[in-house]
Image 1 (cartoon, helix red, strand yellow):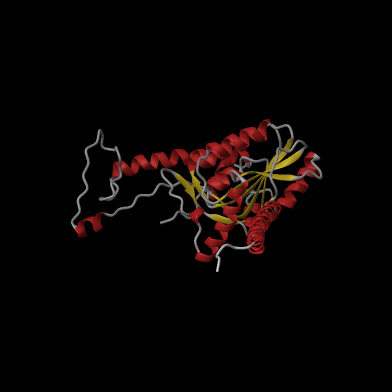
Image 2 (cartoon, rainbow, N blue to C red; image 1 turned 135 degrees about the vertical axis):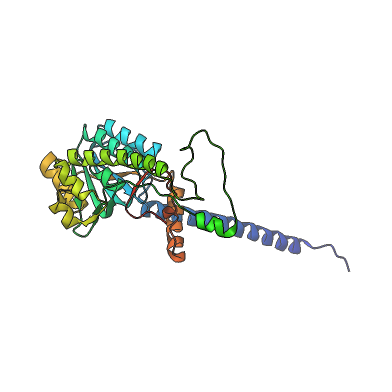
Length: 315
């Protein structure tokens, strides 16, 4: 018997091959269609692909978590001051503070903005230390009745591990150019001359903090000093002490812009922070869910170096 296939068998083989190719083609097209649909849905859910807004609108700046200096954020604030399409700026704050330099940078940036357009701050859960320093750079401050506000003060921390070093028999030595270079040492208590040097550093920053609060809040300096012992207040208490202007949130801030500056029915667009691209936004969305599942927040793992103005530093 011959093993050579007849014409009918050849046609069947060719038909099966064509069917397989056709199935692969439709599977690829279906996969592409699903991918496009997913991207479209995510784009809609995440606010779409942003383009520069060519009409009058309000800018939103979000200050969330630990504050430190940021060249990107400062550049954005500078751009907002020069953008004629932006009629006002709302600063959303939820932060325990951070570095004094970071708070100063935000204060100076908002002060420049304030010279060209109204700026209003909204303290949500927390606006303490460098975060409150930020808020006083605006024209008006809102907070919730039970927001945490204040903690006007500056600190620098030192870990004295001398007893631990002694217990484990470890010695730490150095060669320096002066008695205050790289002090204090971790292996010994803070020496009096070192403490005096650091106290001068803290006092200098603290005096500036008190001065800007007194100036911007139009308060007697002695009154500010009474509040500037590191205490925190509720929004209601802060209102009574004139640390804020009114109880409320973003809606109340918009009402104030409408009644005081006639900025009415304008959209609000967030300018900071913004992910670099839409894929980053997808990753942020997935990452946030994962962090909630494992009970951690990568944003909270921030090392502060130098002078800090923060309500509850990590110990």
